[in-house]
Length: 335
Image (cartoon, rainbow, N blue to C red; front, side, top):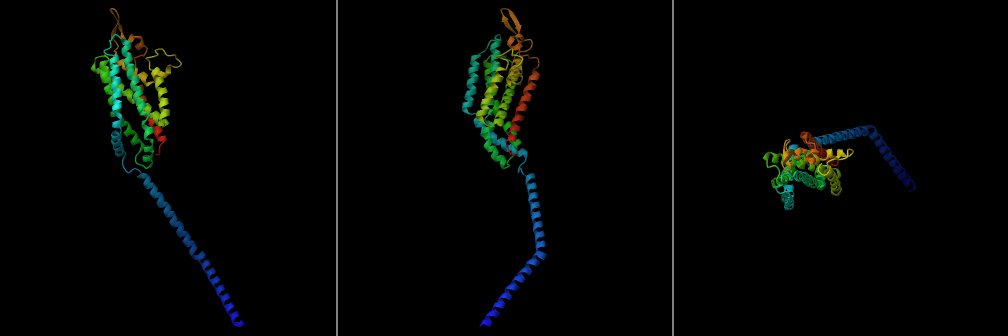
């Protein structure tokens, strides 16, 4: 029995040694023959995957926009008109404009042409009312649309430029209708010059003024993206422009006179007065005495010799404020 047990023990020992030897032989053979080839194959496949992924990213980048710029503009313009027409022509806003126009027309009812101060006061009221009104409406545009804009831009639905241009173009008909109604009512009720050409020029100047004012509101809203802060800053800005407009203060101190050159109300007021009174127009300044209108102190201090320069200044503001608004939006949005 003892001999048999020893024989079995030796056989088991030999069997384990053979297994270890075979295992070691397989490991050595794998490291020598299979491992280099397998490693090379894995690296090659990995490089191909990386290249394929990079190619996909390049193609995706090139085809980021599923539609053309013009198609995006068309769809966004249509959507904007449908969404904002009810807001722009709401009953409350129409009532506000009509009531102010009729009230101001009654206050200046058929003003006497010889009462120059009254008439220039009406013209200045034109520039101020349609400076405040569109500015404070435009402030709300981008802050209120910011969540939607971020969401849609993050998903790559459209270019920021197509959205911005569609917004600007869509606002034109809705922002210019009410000023046209206002000027039409107040101009003829107020007894200003009964000339169709003068009326049309006055209306064009007012529409120009509305677009400049709107641009300031859009810029402030896009920069601050906070309605409360933008409204506060706009109030201060418009107060400065109001005081520097040229109606309340005729002789400003030289160290602060530069404020009038950044006030769009100043240029609008000058243009309105310039088209209302011709160079050689006179008024009755006393019994049997006639004086040149442009020699009237409140008009003479304006300096109406370079009206095209005033138009150029408003044009720069019209374009400049909108560029500022676009750049502010672009800095705060994904490209």
